[in-house]
Image 1 (cartoon, rainbow, N blue to C red):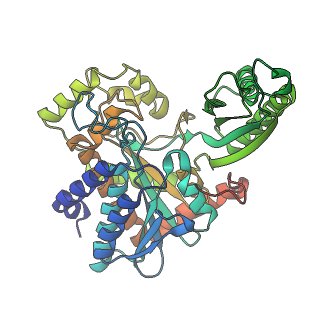
Image 2: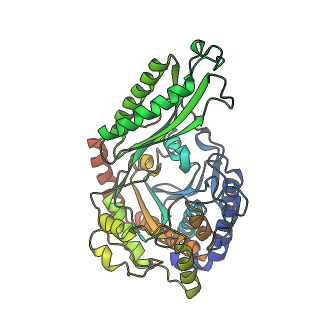
Image 3: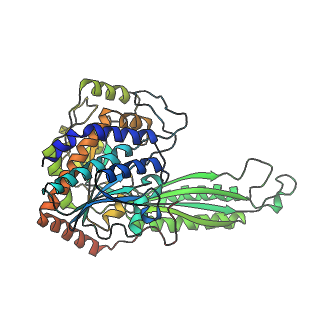
Length: 467
């Protein structure tokens, strides 16, 4: 069976499916229509679907085939708040203040579905052996859906997993990402009349502000790759003449290794305790979610790279290039070439034309000593089963992540082409591992060596619920 030809022959249905999810634009853990649509399509095509995995209503697993190996293909479908946008190269919200797929997860989920269905066809024709599973993973944004699924044992019998993410270039993921945790700090004070008897009050808002000051001073004493972000989620009320009895902030802490994040968390909690002590308030720690860094697997990466070259990246017509050129004028002119060189070496420079707006070449298959500044809950999957990931071009070169520009391109042909390319590559890689047990063993042996040196520790404490 020619997998790329099968996906190409069925591309209309995949594009329509992606556009439906794009229009739904549902936030993490609320993706009822998106997950329901994907579940229905997979069930109709012969997959056995298990809904509500890990006690998450919008998480599911769709399986086809029997026996080993079991190859998982990961999909996401959550959107981001406030990024509603039409598929046009200028700012035009579909709904003021609405949600939008500012990370291209409508594409992400459907490419995985396309890959799973293509592998299912190969199994039916005897061109692959084993079981293919599509994992419907909610709430990658701000929710760590996969981490909760890992903690629940959802991946315990899987042999290998494959995934991808929309980006502004084509290449394997050969760099680490930042582990992170998200936690709320809720301060409890005592209300009082701010003029008549403020001395009887204890301001929770003062504690929040003092904590933020302390956290900012802490930055100087952290490793360079660490990140601290915070917002005040409860400012203490709306009346300035009342000493605020309750106030709350939310922090996201990041570092290249989970152990480093945990150390930073302990220091930030000490800052919060100090703020409470200074203000005579009490602080409550509310752990929200966590993600591990990636455990890379060279064997899977090599196979994915082979398939990226075998399929060949998409080509763009003049209309798509002009769309990208127009949207580029609205984007920050960041040094993406410099970033790609850091990630893929000096060879990447020759692959990025000086006037490029859409990158078609595949970046070199190298692993650099570089930590990408983002985070993903794929990291936790990679610590329990061998995992590989690719990126494909779904947007103009300088498009920032989590932007209306990403939403626009995720709803039109530039994004669609990257989605179909990713689906073909993942399906071929799955077929390769299902038909060449020696390569699967090589990937598993590499994983076992690495996990033995550093055993997995889930970043989410017992008792924390996903929403």
